[in-house]
Image (cartoon, rainbow, N blue to C red; front, side, top):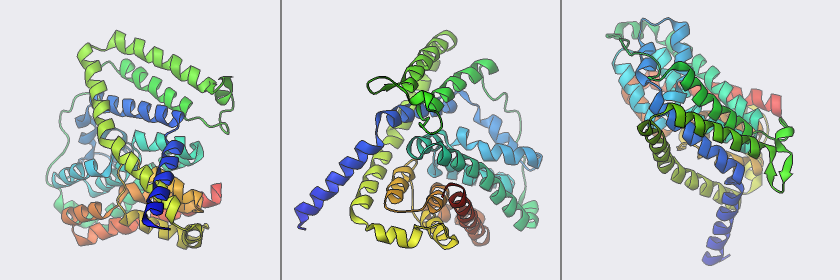
Length: 365
């Protein structure tokens, strides 16, 4: 095949992959995810969350907050790293801080719902569950390994008067996000888990589309009634900012996925990460640890690898390790924590991602 033929083949593969991934349901789900992420960024008081990372906060609270606050504080590893560095230098406990470092990129709203839209809710749910569970296990392990050093390092309390979690009445904030959550669950529901939602009403219009449209109307009424014009503008502008920042990276990820499907022989994938063995899950975890995945790009890339024969277990291992680890992340953690702690964190992420992948292969294989 000459150069023109190679380029044509590559372009055809990229276009085909984009048409596959950017289906109407996934575009709707992605748009809703951006709106929800924008709302979280504007309406949720981050200082309220951050006060729970101090050394005087009870462990049961600090670890739980750290494990789920990635939904509030970050959308990718590039934004979690400065926060991680700041919290650690200000005296934050190493356990909750590393819990946040792992969970932040893995549990964000965009990643969870886009994973569900592409892979189905079985993998989407397991990814969210593992992100929370493994982050706590990694944090507890780091605290156990470096408890004596951590106690000597703590200098200041991160807490203080941070006010309430939102400046709006609690019921209004809850209803605002619950409507969007129901919309996301509805539009990403697969025929396997929700047959009723996928019944055709007219042509390609399904029940899920009608219900999503009705919920969108309710959301518009709620926003118009409760939000000031400047609040609505801030929400939409933040969502648009996230789209500008992340969507081009997603297109790059989809393009890479197309090239993978076009040029990597399936037998290579089957040979190294095709089965559900500890070794294949370890290989996938190490690949994820060394590569850099911008937010959401891991989803189309992993989907292409699965289409080429990658097992569901190694796929989960890559989905877990990929967003939370990379060479840039490792270099930053090395500078902040030092060699011993950084490589301990690196090893724990690879270890637990490997185990989670292996368990997933048993459950869904």
